[in-house]
Length: 181
Image (cartoon, rainbow, N blue to C red):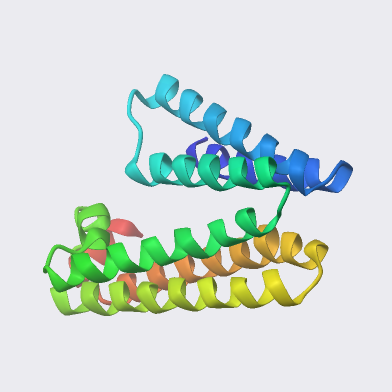
């Protein structure tokens, strides 16, 4: 259910874009992200920082897109969010307080050097995605960017999540691997 809620604003954005335009889709994205926060809080009685940051970014850049009738703002949102994720992960690792380890360390106990590799991998991944987004957003047609944003970046993120889990699993102590089977 939680994963479905995470993808709901993206699905709504895509569907509204296909039937209307980027401006109506941007407004729908703002509304859907607000609804996502409300439903998440109603179901789980808490909100994750990532959801709050995403909502703020969607609201700011979506509103700028609507007010100035310029799709550049909603396109930049993607790169800025990925940049913030990369910076947060990198800084947390430099401070020896890996965000990924704090999120997943209870379920997957691996050495700190493994957490560091995974963290730096995701820093590079988010940085590359942000740069590729700039290229696609400002060099290719809007339709291509919307498809890339919805399908390309989502698929890449899911694939990298699966790869990360397999990598972590490979480095789990034998007794913990047996528990997970």
